[in-house]
Length: 545
Image (cartoon, rainbow, N blue to C red; front, side):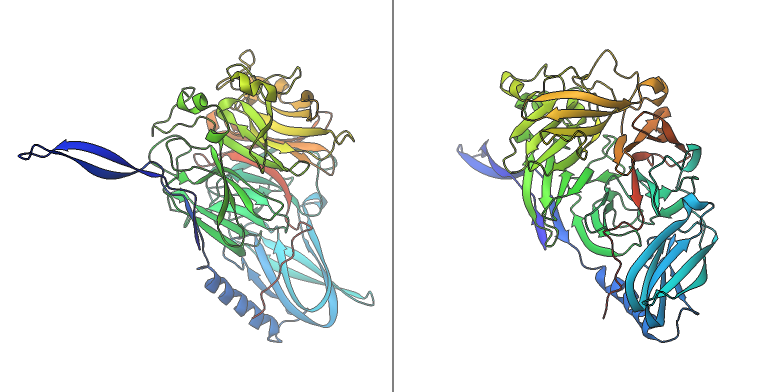
């Protein structure tokens, strides 16, 4: 199944003089003003994955593997080297609890499988690299009788492209941790990986990743990768999981791909900054439409069919002069990156989306059905009079080059307000705050009353760190719901040589402070997330033949 965004063609009439005849004629030349962006639902991977699962089913049903002789398959889908699959049968139906021994209690990874079964296919996540990992398996029958078994799993060495991780501080009593939470590094390129409170890598993927790494409502992952790690373009979108199993694959044409650095050569990407799951289960993705204007279009992709169901072109919403006359930044390839959309967030309260445009120093809310603007956050200078009514009122400093705007859970028991958390790079690209520009970067939380069109700032972190933690590009801020802590990623320090991740409390106390260094070019932390390897929505199933 292949879906196409759009292709616009027109005919140019040329008047030419035909030698020797003294007459003129019209010659039509078809010119593509926009390259096609097409998507296909790829199922070529299914045969190989099915063969693997058939093998595992045969092993499980063979009768050879019991609680006293557990079969261990390291990296069962050849994509998650610090994972394994345990296969065994028990005579009585039993639940299973597993524990991957850490260096201390805070880094021991645990999970419970609460269904009473006799056939057990148990995913093990969070192994250490280059280690003989001790995994405790506790079996409990319906009468409450338990037995404990131990499995040792040897893993290989860690990939060299993963950063050096220096934990300067980690107060595990105050950090937002559970039984399998890790801090995930979402890169601009190369490997996605996750580390524990000691800075030890406990998960990584062999599939290179760029920007798109999101947990879905079913516990799976939305993951942008390539055809192969040595390919030029990030144009393969996967629905996968931490074990590496694939559920859907969408292949995007490379014709609309662009280089993040503005060059005409080198690594390219099609889905450039963000992708989210909508309530329908479909995906909303930030893409290039193939024109000379880039990073200003979104598509809704049908999850089941791969069809493009909706297109939102910001050129249809914002002032024409903003893109036609844009000159705040330039690119070697000649493309015009006038908006540079770097995030999208769905707000279920009113069926709207909140988007961040770095090159307009603007965050705005748009009705998802009609694409009508609901509000704009930022400096209103330079905007046409017809847009002034959308600007929020309040004494809040304009952001500059900001990233990763998200909607928070209710913070003040008021249905009329919405709290937005985002990372303010604080670089004035077009209309940011000139007085403070490039002096510091910070995470910011603002409270918006949609009905009254007002805004107030309620929390910030970063200004006191000063110039040393200023980052002109990338960065993120995330809300950790169990504690109310925030995870802040200063992703581009030291001209892209260091990424610093901090977890801070509501009161501004730093309870985690980590520096990442020695990573390949552009493999910095684009975003940092705190995810659980065994999230409550995920259930692993070994496919029955």
